[in-house]
Amino acid sequence: MPRSADYQEHLLRALTNPREAEAYLNAALEDEDPRIFLLALRNVVQARGGMARLASSSALNRESMYRMLSKRGNPSLKTLGTLLASLGFRLAVEKNKAA
Image (cartoon, rainbow, N blue to C red; front, top):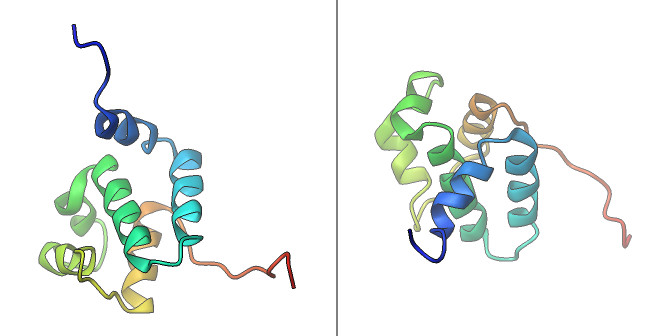
C-alpha cells in the first residue's frame, strides 16, 4: 500500500460532491489569473464524468469543450454559462464585501 494518496485522485473524489465543487470553483474565481478557474473547471468536469459525458448532456461538443478549457482557452460568457448549467451551477454576481 502506498504511503500517501494521489492528490488528484483525492481531489476528483471530493469534487463529486456538489458543495465541494461549488466551493472549489468559487475559490478559483478569487484568483487574479483566469487560467486558475479554467483548471478548476476542468477538474470538476473530470470528476463529473469527463468531457464526453458532459458534451452529451449540454449543447456543446466535446472538441469545443476541450478548447474552451485548455490552458489557452477563452470561453465566451454564453458557453461558460452553458457548461456550468450542465454541471448544475450558474454564474452569479454579488456585492464586494470591501466596497
